[in-house]
Amino acid sequence: MMEIGSIYEMNPEAVRTAEESSAALFSLKETEKYGKSNIAFTASGRSAIALALKSFARNREKENRPETDGAKANAMGAMKRCLLPAYMCDTVFFPFQWEGWEIQFYHINKNLEADAEELGRLARQMRPNLLFIHPYYGVDTWKPMRSLLKEWKAQGICIMEDVTQSYYLENAGKEADFVVGSLRKWYSVPDGGFVASNEPLAMDLPAGEDELTKKRLDCLTEKWIYLHGSQGREEKKAMKENFLKKNREIEAWLDVHKEIGGLSKVSAGILSTEEEKGCQNRRNENYRYLFGKMEGKSEDKSQFWPILPQLMGEEAKTAAPLYFPVYVKDRDGMQKFLAEHNIYAPVLWPVGKENEGCLTEDERFIYSHMLALPMDQRYGKEEMEYMGKVLEEYEKSDIKP
Image (cartoon, rainbow, N blue to C red; front, side, top):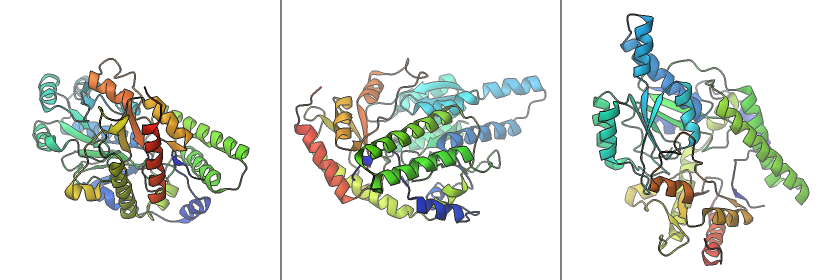
């Protein structure tokens, strides 16, 4: 059966092979392009951010060790002010809150770009210790401001770059003090994240969370059986409800789990055999196909249109985003239409309670109209052509906002 999107699936046989493998010297070539001397592999992107924050605090504490415990506490409190984008995943707030950071938001326009003037003003007024940036959907939306990052670093501001949406982006992370990302969003693994830095990292990570790993493996293998098994319609329906329910429970557990876990052995085994270049190439093919289907689409002419401009030249040859992002006039209506055709396009992201009171008109538009079309390496020409056909049907349909 053809379904596009939703959680990854995994062949149970691949799990058994990975469990038997040895990946003691595990590494991922794609993480080496950031040019950092230290890399740690974590259980999730949240764990990666938490580890980076702990490392930041520990390293600054050593550099500026106060004379007394009281002075130490005051110094640590004063050095935990950060600037975060107002358009971001709400779960990213959690590690900052757990580590006691004071959060200030900077704004993102509908082109998913920050404003240099606003950031400069906030840097002068707030004197933050850390700037968190996000190149969105495989495009270097920070390209016009990379030189400014170097200036802010020279002023003592730590740069943390989250590449979860742009893992394959060649120019990402070079200016950052810490590069963080989620690997489980990119590959069929039960857990996975990483942090890369030239600074010492705070701890030797424990083995991956057994509970998280086992539950996620159950979800991934159950989905594989659901897709490839010979069960009847009702049994498949029950299976799907079950693994999606399990996945929601896992994500809820991660939201409150503060421990920093390491990459599990089974995920290391899977990733050690992953053909990352092949995955990038497949995503690039899908990206270029979908952009071809977007030709001529704009806000004044269409029901949906691409958020970001089409990349050209060398950038187009390597573009491989996490999703293909579009704006939709009736986002909920299009999402429902796609789901009725077995295409599951997520909304990135829900508004968090932390930033809901400070959003600009542009940011409210992003949160209300953005839809993420799945285009990962599981899919090829057949699936993209099917999605293109369904998108054309939606454009011609009577479903209007």
